[in-house]
Amino acid sequence: MLSLTNKRILLGITGGIAAYKCAELTRLLIKAGAEVRVGMTRAATEFITPLTMQALSGQRVHLDLLDSDAEAAMGHIELARWADLVLIAPATADFIARITLGQADDILSTMVLATSAKIAIAPAMNQAMWADDSTMTNLNVLIDRGYNIFGPAEGEQACGDVGPGRMMEPAQLLELSASLFETGELAGKNFVITGGPTQEAIDPVRFISNHSSGKMAYALAAEAVAAGAKVTLISGPVNLPTPESVKRIDVITAAQMLVATHEAMKGCDVFIGVAAVADYRPVEVATQKIKKSEEQMQLTLVKNPDIISEIAQLEEKPFVVGFAAETNDIVSNGKDKLKRKGLDMLFANNATETFNSDSIVVTALTETSETELKPGNKNVVARNMLQLIAAALNER
Ligand code: C5P
Image 1 (cartoon, rainbow, N blue to C red):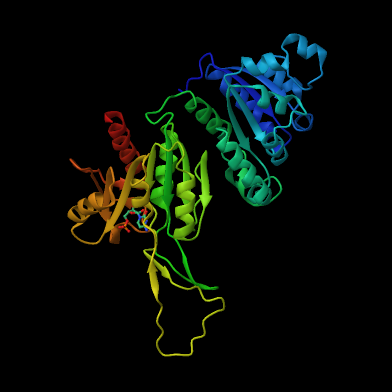
Image 2 (spheres, helix red, strand yellow; image 1 turned 60 degrees about the vertical axis):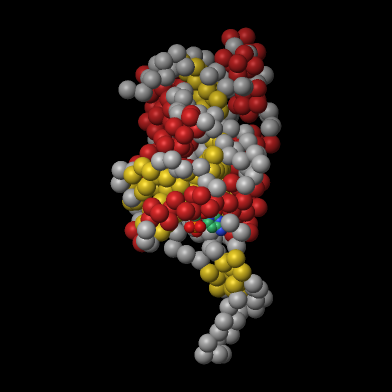
């Protein structure tokens, strides 16, 4: 049973169809031991009545900034101070945009601005609105500010579309809210993870790349967040959803990945280079599509920067973890790489089994140790990898 004993949750409901689920959410939060007070935007009251929310929470519902009766019971600043968690569910695209700007034009946005409690938002909107650049940009700003983003889930939407944008189910929101009060073994640690392949253009339509799926990096990012870390994921082109509360920066080339990685290094405690960075790139990128006139053609390639080695050489370097996908002599090649690149830890694995696969067999190497990890799916293995990293950080 999840515990929210004595936790004070301000549930902020904004105007989306998923607001009807807040009745169930309130019931579950109270059953888990939380004290719940409810604030609603005017639009939210079109979807669920304040009377319903008052009956379920046992408290007067806050609707207006300038409601003298409600303010007399508990003023908005007092309410913002009272909360251990401000949970905005559902959070509409408009509400997300308003809090990104720091507006305080209704009771809920004011509360978000005034509180020093944890803030979690459960987005709910049409899938195209969710995918829009504006929403994605706003979301990254909120993640940067340390907000927790719960969802959204994927599936059928009230408007008939199918895709990401559904509010998470109340039971999931309860679970994620409870997890915010657990301190994981990586609490307070900043992680930067690179993942996926890079693509190196030959001409406007062709590129050199590899089969990396990004699954390992994405599993590590999700599990690191679950263990309490703040995670920036610098991702090459992959077809994977961004794990919850992870700040994702999309890049295409090795050169872009290098720049993004350096930019993310401030305050970084652990850097994990999982990306399968293309070793070489064409010296020149043709500005027009190359015609296939000759029987043979030659491409001149130049070596790409070794991102992880550069990070390992920084004066203020984080704990640096690399991966080695090898096809033969996995452990001895891994040990060479650990030394040559100046890494603190390296996970060596079999490239032919790993790429694009859901499971992985790995050996963890440090200067003084060699540990075979239990085989399993990438999420389980990621958890074991993070345990080893956490243990190494504790020993430092
Ligand atoms: O490709 P290689 O076997 O050298 O990769 C080993 C490690 O180095 C991996 O962690 C990979 O992410 C990192 N790497 C990198 N930049 C490169 C090549 C590899 O960060 N250009």
